[in-house]
Length: 385
Image 1 (spheres, rainbow, N blue to C red):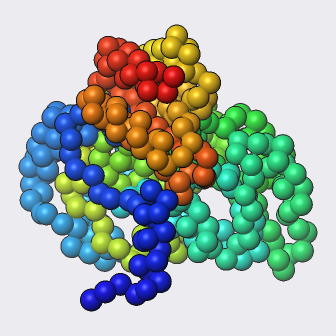
Image 2 (cartoon, one colour):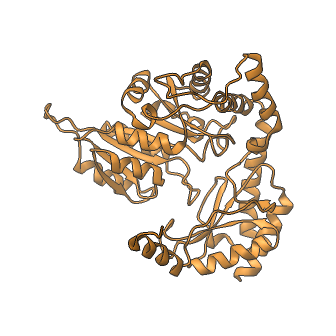
Image 3 (cartoon, rainbow, N blue to C red):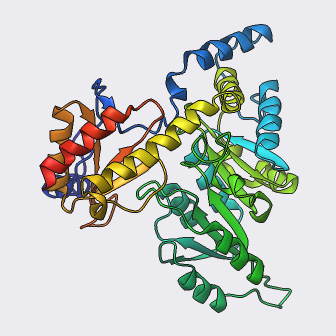
């Protein structure tokens, strides 16, 4: 059966803008594209330890069998959530099936009708989708611009009318996925305290990257008590699947009761939860990998400067490094040239980013060598100069 004409027109528009998305295939190239920052996704020890952990507990079940509120809350969940909350110095943790589920569920259920959500304009699509499902009013502030944020806060300070209490939620990310940059979290916490606002941060691209044991940027700065909620996603630095919302025990109870993406979905399998738990345990063992990643980030930035490439890159001290190359056709062309030379570097096209802000996105890993970094950046210099 043919697509409706309106859907076909949307596909044609994407093709005309050279922005049609297609599923890639495994290519065997040198990895500068994946979110597997410290190599946990390919870590054989984690794979075998997760399997042995299940055998030791005599758990031989392939699926959760239901939602966690019915039959799916197997014993591993409690063990994993307890470990995660202690690791992150949080009162409680609640595991979700994915970072997308966690963000959509949190932002659609926690802010209420008379509340205000102030979010960074570059926040992830999952946050924005959750906000759209909320009954709260939402306003975006300019990226990492705390002056612009404070102007918005001043407009929406909590009311004294007990019939319509207003709570302000400030929403940001500790590492932004399309730029690799970070907000000034210390100043942000000062601002939130001044106005009694509730801070929420997505740490998807900070887990496994920042901190002595990869605990994330907020905790590495000693600011964990200043945030109402932290959302930790496991599909990046932790190398597996799922996410957790960190916060108070009361927040956990609220999410269990009112978050539709938690209540109405089948839980993760025991094997998945075992992998999450073993991956977290490896963060405390694999400090050399975390240090190697940090070293590679520094080296990549040094090479950018040596080759005169720094002006085209977004400022970043994270594992995400983005070179702005305007135009979908232009950035796809250079990405293809790098791929033809053996390097898996992906273009980020509009409309994922605004037109004129198309970019090459380099994801750095602990397993990338300095030689690989030199070679890929020298190739980039030959293609853009």
